[in-house]
Image (cartoon, rainbow, N blue to C red):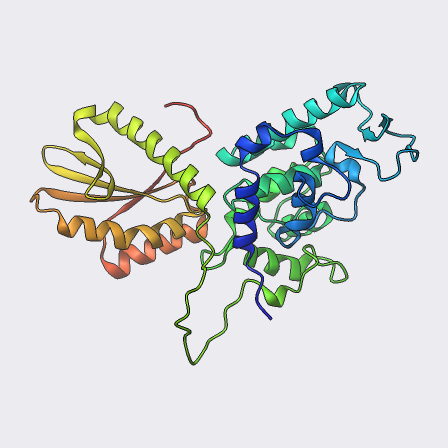
Length: 352
């Protein structure tokens, strides 16, 4: 039996629903009955392995199409075939309701994309739904556990005094700070859920033994394989944003004539009178992953550079290092006797 690859499913979702597609989405593309390709079907069913939000009525989507038009729930506003949340913000017509949901959905995606997770707490969509969406667009900077009861247990385990109004973003940030550098976010989710989740209800409703693990083998196939894990949409979008913002910051500091892009494959190079700074940009979710991928490349660029000035090495990612990342950075510097620095670029800020 083939293993389920969470990264591949995430890539498929993002290829189908990039933010550009969501901005143009219609009500019928957002939610429908009998159509497996709607946005809500992707979030709830097709990406179930990336965290389940099943078990709660379809009103969690803000607006939904009833399977039986004549069955009109009393606590919602009901149109001819759609029902939506009964509140002033959602409006009195299905068009008003969908436009409001779409607006909140786009804001959720944008905040997740830039790592501005605290703002998602204030999005007026159901918690299960908005945090699942946020995870899908977060570059795996959120742990795909969405049920509040499980999150509370995890938060208490890590020493957080949880109150009724404790924001989900605070619990998510706490989990991210404790994610071991050797685990993917999905492996970490499994580890946490096995400890704190309801054993009768797996959060992803999947066999966790089928994902997140790789066994040893005595032989290697020479057949061509499709290796997932390089998330094309995330990687391309994030790398460009990080590189462009880093370029702007360096030009502001050193001047445009001293900053070059993509010279001999180096992401960014800064020429100074006494030294040359090499910057390698990575869009991975954690500092340790950026460093693991970047160091081999940037060392090769440095050794090939024939300029005799001192060369400084910088690995650049989106997020600051957590405790596990810092331990990894110290280990690499001490054991390899290698001088380099890691820096992060905050995409949630429009300028410096």
